[in-house]
View 1: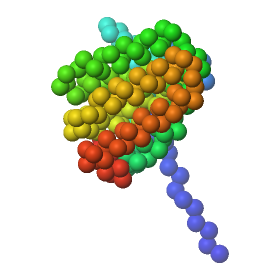
View 2: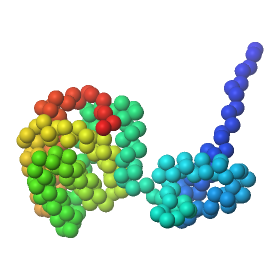
View 3: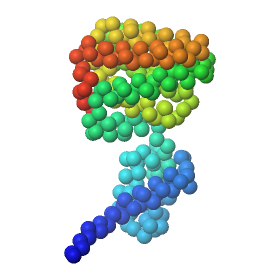
Length: 244
């Protein structure tokens, strides 16, 4: 019997560098705000040339784990923000050809629970901020992009007010992915902005009164209404979401 073996591929040195540093970051030996050694120091520690170290650091910077501060040549450990995560995950969703229907299904699961948690806490300061967002939505005139930014900000702030960072990081990519199509929908469906304001106002009222089930119900209605708006705007739900 003939036995065959696959070739062993050696990992490039710069990837080994980035993985070694990443391991220190993820194990919290290096924490957000900590500075990394200089390129020269890292080259000496790893026993590699500086160009290899530089490429390894570039990978970490692209991944959002390190960054440079203004006026500094050093790299610092960076904790990716929800916006950083949103951009990366939404790109991955686009490459995986995610459809509007799939995002809508995810929002139907996620957003009502966010509304329930916010109603349970009923933080007065946070709810006041939600009210300000709704008020700004009504003052955008014909600036459809700004109107959508306020509608999306409502969802972002609602997730933040749950106090659950997993929900925040999960919700952010969905809004990031949908924003371009939401602008198109609001532009094509004249009643969309008023319906968004009405639904978000009802969600706020329910949260302020700690009526958790009502907050959930209104959020479900709100997400269903987005689906109707897309259909009226001629956006097919089984369509792959464009990168925008």
